[in-house]
Length: 230
Ligand SMILES: [Zn+2]
Image (cartoon, rainbow, N blue to C red; front, side):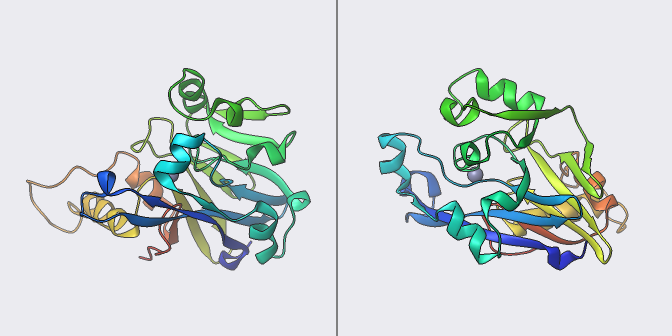
């Protein structure tokens, strides 16, 4: 695999209402998935905005890109996808999961437990006919060179994917951070003691050191088109 075998796909946008932005204005936010042409088949991280009912539709006003169209831009069809990973199970990351019934769907056991406990996501998008979960407790190599690493924060069961390519690693961070700049600050917090800074210092995310161990060349996000590079 090469870094360029990892492609972003555009799954749509929604408008975060002024009540949630804190900026005095609504904000248009993107929803991205990622495809990885791994030797054993194509991995898809996240499947876009689900239908969470009329209240959520009116609140977030989503505009969806159909999955066939989104994959088509990357030269793929749904039949090409052999495994699915969800960074977490909120409605804006699992909308297309039922399209992939029967195919292995990798998620943290803790995340599925939370999703099934209620008041968390769209239940029909979690336990659909043919849902075939491969549950992970912590870190796992789910395919050669494809590592799932827990990155709790946004939610307890959040996970990211590290793809170890011949020319470096790519981190599909999902929503481990909302933006590349937040990631950048967290990465610096993890490196601060080594850089010679003395306390007081910010607390980095507990998983950041583990991710940086992979020496990523790129980190990409579910809701930010910006890319972190070292
Ligand atoms: Zn999200």
